[in-house]
Image (cartoon, rainbow over all chains, first blue to last red):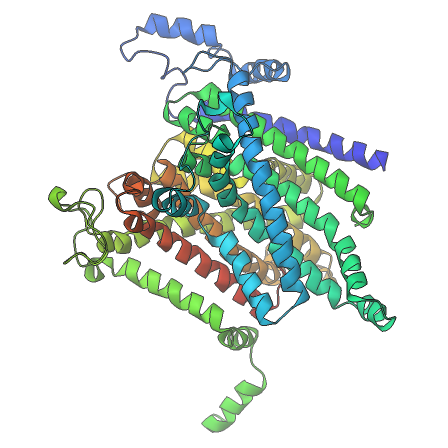
Length: 317
Length: 294
């Protein structure tokens, strides 16, 4: 088992290097000069050259990459052009806000998704299955940024029950777990939970339906096992995969929160990325994407390892 | 012999229908899938015939008549924030929205299949190199990769298409690679090689036939995701630029009227939702008709 885990981790290192390379190239992919947002349009050629040297843009690409990677490994992602604060600080605060939102969304999505999936799989090919499956298709098909707007229209604009945007009084700096702040989390979390709900429901439905059609299930029933006992067998078989899907979905939500955070003005990585893109703050863009992608890679490995520990059959296949 | 009775020949056909005829017959019996196909064809029809179907010019607005609710005289679905006819803009919007959603998947199908089939057929070091490079792109959540790329490249239709194509190449290449690797070691491919068939003729006759079906259905399922992502890019202000009518962009510009005209604001999103759910249901129907596991 330990050997397997070690192998899995070592296998990830080249991927991580590749991810870093892609993030590094993002800045040089930009059609405009990376200094365009720092320099005034009438800057002299001399000043431009000086800044190029200062930022290290005059060096060959590979040298820039090695230096950038070395600094990044030590936790230095550069300085934000917009706020002049270290990128690491900006990203850390945003990541913690996004993590809070996406963890809650994943939890809601997992609970609803496994419920609908179980019901649909258990009553396979009945009208209950059709309704539960329809809900999961809606979940994966709905443009979630639009769903967010619709929820704002209903619960904020029309009913006035919940606040439409932001993170409560004082912003995310003054976050407390009281109603005044938590109420801001409800609409974005529900909006976000729809995607994992649909995907988990689909996965669980297929697993449960297949499992119940297998011969050992008929055997267990013939033995006189109660429905509750059957249910326990199903849960044991489905849990590792369902949990693995949930873990991966958390990663997707962390990286994909930008649209929902824009709708709800939630102060997370999405809003940070949005600002960075439109104000050409390339170090922040690069740093945020690097952190989110690395998080996703690590999460994938963790999910793989956990799944193997829960279900040894995974390793053999 | 040449004058076979028509009744006989039709009997012959119904006794041994081809693969696609069987798929079509099974597909036809699924009302949900047929309905989804009808919706998609209708949207396609509207997109192509927009100049004749749309009641008004989608770019011409009267500021005095801005943000009228649906049901206003002369404007069946109301007017947008610049007083342009909503119905006409939604119809014209089908053009860019469908184009931005379908094109990246189509391009990625070509590039991804070539990469995947090359890796699967050649195998060895080439496979390792190609597939490990693909793995790097898998390390990014798809929404993040699309936004990162088009954020770095800047707004615009071409940049949006490039970013989305890059997002869809890795999953397609992976499916193509695994199917090709599976086919390569089959006995009949071995036999073809033994009888002197070259690499290209083996790929054309044996690999392509096996790869195209699964890849095609997989590509269809990606269109739903692609529609949401493409409109999402425009919603953020990347992708399509104003004043072009595109559903994601319309959703963004109407966001300011969310308190005054809530129903109007929600309309472009309904179109995106309708398109993406239709593609998802069509794919589900095709999958069960072709008997392919998800």
